[in-house]
Image 1 (cartoon, rainbow, N blue to C red):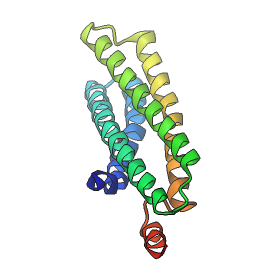
Image 2 (image 1 turned 30 degrees about the vertical axis):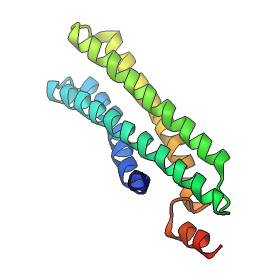
Image 3 (image 1 turned 135 degrees about the horizontal axis):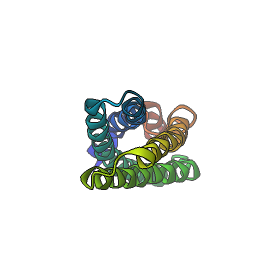
Length: 158
């Protein structure tokens, strides 16, 4: 499953971009009251959740590869990995819950007024979790070199 682990850096950027764009489009739909923006926001949220599932699955595989590296003598910052993993899971479940809430409101034709504003506030709040996930993931790459060719070369030397 090293293939999945190697694709984690590619997959996460879909989730990051979609989950950052979603609250902006949701806010624009509220302000401009355009139906096409509402529908676009819903689709972007759906795609963002799907890509977040992929990011979490590939991330779990990347953690397994890191465990194998540790067995070979590499120093792996598992504390930082666990924080990143925790925020990634929170982000996934937060936006999945928001998707369910938004879908139910749309289907029941109650996606208006206060409930619509609530969804926008929740969407904007979700940006915090996206930020924290990315912050911890970036630290793993740029501070510790996890998942980079440099880390692989370090392991092969030992």
